[in-house]
Image (tube, rainbow, N blue to C red):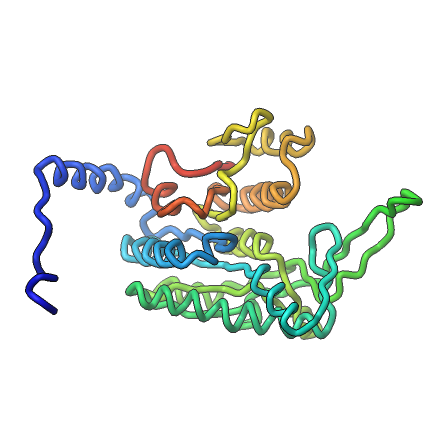
Length: 304
């Protein structure tokens, strides 16, 4: 290291005071979450941006160093789509869920439990953490049943059953492996691949998997990183806090639309099943996790 690189840029007393104020402001929040579990669903633009990915890894390691137990559940829809396209495998969707045949599930598992999982693990380790990659198959962590859905025919207006193939809904979560990890300095990183009772490989929606895992662990927080600010009201303004009743009302009234509906439903299910609160927040905001957990204002929509 050159002598030039060792020179610290001088800071004014105002800078030092501002930095000290930030640290002291964070202290009560660190105490609140001390030794608590926080499940983080990681995906979207934040996962595809190199700078945001690096910041995410640093933030998660900081949580662990602060005495919090982070558990990462990641998605990978765009990466799966890209690989399927490269292999000339066409995708079909029903009610927003990928129809997954035997050929597709092999690619899904390869991308999620392989490439993406190890990229996240490597980033966390490079940031100074000790991350270990898993899927729901490891230690029978997540047992799922095949997802059943129905689709209304546009011409006949009759609902018909849709076979989604190897798509699963969590039925049982065994936290034994995670409990051991959380008592150590390991940061678990989970790919949402599960098995059925018959040993079939099933692809589970990452939001759904994160919600089921957070409930099983009785997590203090479930943080769901998205590509939007959070939940918006009828005027398009961010709603910083929602009760379960109001969240359900936003869905019924049509204010909550599209992909936000399953996220809210996952948030509600998690809270009803023992999670302290769920936060839907914008993963594109630098250090969104730290802003949410360690500041008074937070960084998204809290549902409790």
